[in-house]
Amino acid sequence: MTMMDLAVALLRLLPPETAHSLTVELSAAFAPLIPRAKPDDPRLKTEALGFSFANPIGMAAGFDKNAAAYPAMFRLGFGHVETGTITPLPQPGNPKPRMFRLPADGAIVNRMGFNNKGMEAAAAHLMRRKAGGVLGVNIGANKTSEDRIEDYRIAYLRLAPLADYVAINISSPNTPGLRDLQAREELHRLLSTLAEARGTVMRPLLLKIAPDLDEAALDDIAAEVLASRIEGMIVSNTTLARPGLKSPHADESGGLSGRPLLTPSTALLKGMRARVGNKLVLIGVGGVSCGADAYAKIRAGASLVQVYTALVFQGIGLLDRIKRDLIGLIERDGLSSIAQAVGTDAK
Image (cartoon, rainbow, N blue to C red):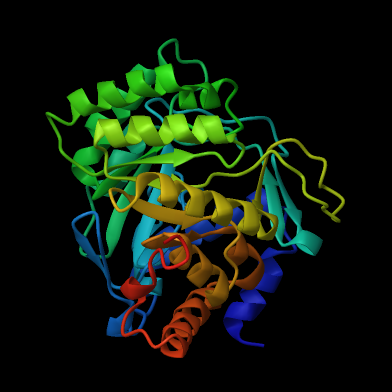
């Protein structure tokens, strides 16, 4: 057992949120001491959103809620990191306990509720940013806000200048009513408001959607996103479904992430690629726990892939394994780069 394996095993002895908080705090404090990952195989290089990514694998939002630990994630070898979700004002989130491991299912249920220190605290960390990979900031609305669309405008204007791209999270199931913003009329209002804000600060915008949407809703979202001319989508957030789970905490309320989400989120990704063609950058997230999972999302239409839940169970060594497996898979398929695999199952 390596030291990293031992650390992961010890962290799993702690309550889930305690382990998460400790990991983030230690990552932020000791980032300069973390050895830099070796350079990536050039066949993993990916061009998207106007940036060059050393590899297509990123840390998903939800880990680094206050934009404090992203330097450590870059040193560990992620091609991009997405911080947040960050709201204009600080908020404590939902009552504890609010995070539950489902080890038999390779999954987590959370009902965190956008707990974060607010955009000013995040901005203070982001202003100290040095060289690294591509950095995204995920923004949301405060639970008690009287005008949630205005919250997104405010957060965008404050944080976009400090980020490479901004993700619009309207798909968390843990803020009551938030997913209503995915309805066509509200989504049109939101994207129109952010289009105005982009006249002041231009950064790529990506919309993060839920997996629990019917075909008509997906059609509406695709139409609005294409009309708005934002750059991409993140597919998908956590699910309210509970597909044949075995673990004791399976019935806890909140969003389910991890292995059970792989098949439905990848099917949704493939369907969205069919709807939008090559006009948008898609980021695939949900259930990735090995290189084959990441490759399935890439073949379904994702230019980039994000991980989080599997890291809880497998540790940071997962990142190198995914990258190594991706090289093997493109060699198997006779491809010279990972970019050539994007969307091959969606054509």
